[in-house]
Image 1 (tube, rainbow, N blue to C red):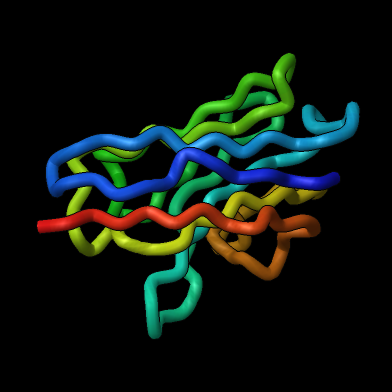
Image 2: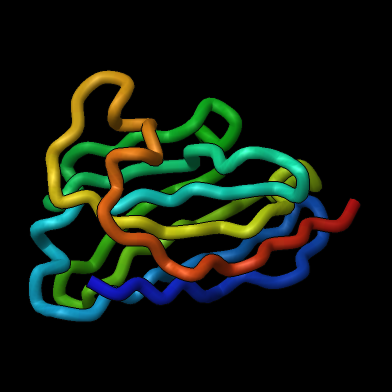
Length: 126
């Protein structure tokens, strides 16, 4: 599976962006998908995860209520709608695909993912 993230950019605090991650191949619907981010000088951190059917969704506390993950299996694409953006949301955002189901803390763990996209940069100005 090859993943291509897009939709990043420069936005003012309080604004919105929608990230997209397009996957190649015909097996997209057999993967859970996740979004992670890495700010300058920081470790990569979990943002959100959606199960292959879309029925299970997880968010980091820092984005809960502001970000919404969704997917369209017919288009092989996962989205991250980001509203009420804050300067601390500034980071490179990565999408990733996990062929396995998750449980417990593994639903938030970046080590479980099999494939990663190249990242798209989001900058939120104050």
